[in-house]
Amino acid sequence: MLYITKSWSIVTALDARTGKELWTFDPKVPGGTGRYACCDVVNRGVAIWKDGVFVGTLDGRLIKLDPKTGAVKWSIDTVENHAHTYTITGAPRAFDGLVVIGNGGAEYDSRGYVSAFDADTGKLVWRFHVVPGDPSKPQENAALEAALKTWDTTGKYKFWDIGGGGAPWNSFAYDPQLDLVYFGTGNGNPWNRELRSPKGGDNLYLSSVVALHAKTGEYAWHYQTTPGDTWDFDSTADVVLADLKIDGQMRHVLMHAPKNGFFYVIDRETGKLISAQKFATVTWADHVDLATGRPVEAPGARYVDKMAVVFPAATGAHNWQPMTFDPQTGLVYIPAMDSAGIYAGQKDFAYHHGSWNLGVDFAAVSQAVLDAIKAGKVPPPSVGYIKAWDPVTQKEAWQVAMGGAWNSGLLSTAGGLVFGGDAYGMFSAYDAKAGKKLWSIDLKTGILAPAMTYELDGEQYIALLAGWGGAGGLSAFKDPNTALSKYQTDQGRLFVFKLGGRQQVAALAPEGVPPSEPPPQTADAATIAKGFTLYHRNCLVCHGFFAQSEGEVPDLRLMPKEIFAQFDSVVLDGALADNGMASFKDVLSKDDTAAIKAYILDQSHAAWDAAHPKK
Ligand code: CA
Image (tube, rainbow, N blue to C red):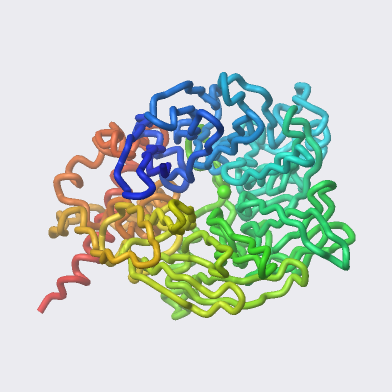
């Protein structure tokens, strides 16, 4: 049986020989939860342990399902403290009778933590918070007492009210010999350290790899990849365990290539850094000092008084899409990106529970992009590629360009192949040694998840859950050549390949409604300008910069006039909450929505006029 997860944390079991659906479990996540998931209503898979299939749901539950029937064995609310905003998008990790899960929410107001539950009973065994809580109270453990010293507690905004961040939303690895569990932690909350910890400080354990004793959840060691993070450099990319011969000695290491663009090789017993080098375009730091283990930052990389442009962007040089290690070639294959990030501090920042609390002004950033385009300085397009990396010499072995920037995780096989897919829908196999493309197919669906492989009846299969979205698909990268742009459907598909397979791949039918002429604009320029600012502070993360979407969520410029007429019932009253469009009544007034509507209408007319030039 194959188990897959889909949007809204839905689990489906299929016959691995035929693809026949055996059961589907829908946890019925309330649609309004979509507003609290920074980067789409995604789910990155299940864990399996003995008699259970485990899934984390977007609204924070951990559920044990019967592998044969999909019946619920137990269901636990892992985020019972709803004073903060939490979601789960990551896969749990199950081992030794425990199920470990983290949470997301460091773009909102979360204080990230990892929990371990008993696989049989669902009882909480331990919990580890990534960042300190209220400094006037005792911290949960000695590791957090130590961490508190790396935070400034005197700022106007109290990080413990906003949450502090550190969301461990993706990677977990387990070493049974050392009985250590490893995970990466997310960015600070707010992103902007000037607001979070104005006098500086490393802000432990943000943007770090943390090792805990698996049975007790006690702190073992940490390595912080981005001290005092201010760029959304989550260290939540996968943690890969390997044994490498370094300077003639066999070392038990972990390898980590987080958003910040450095490839780290760390002794996984002690947490001591062995080596670190840039694997992509990186300008925020010059290098990592091996004596101190700290990055040497570039002057001006922090946006204290003025805007900063740095590589990589907040989407990272490598995000959650898994890299893969091939012990035969000794190479790590990384789905890498080069993309510039623009950062500007938000002068009039005000904390608001349940909203984005970044302290970064996306209205100012968007205006800077418009100004640059007007001045003829078009920003360079973001690019994606597979980078084959030698972790011992810390040097590139080969690289190949992919279509689009936001591409799939990778799979390497013992047959000497590396499988990867891209935003344009191409799925390819490469020679692991030299990177030569050996095989390729156009799936007409964008690809983000890594492929996996299994053997049944002596035959090898390659399974790929194709589908596209997430942070990059919603708003970060605009590209008319993505499969989503081309085919205008965001439906995912499971593809399974074997030698001799003969099926053809057809495009799915487009979704959505054909555009109609927008209603007349009645607002003045000042209202439209106000709408520009409010839109880019409240709406852009899902609906895209400049109200332009590739179609994963509705492109608001194509909004039918009936919806324009009922704008407030959608935005304030939550008329479409079941679809994921929650009410924003707690942050926006009627004047605000009138301005946002005016801005969208402005963009709508611009798009309509461009498509229908007057004779
Ligand atoms: Ca983040």
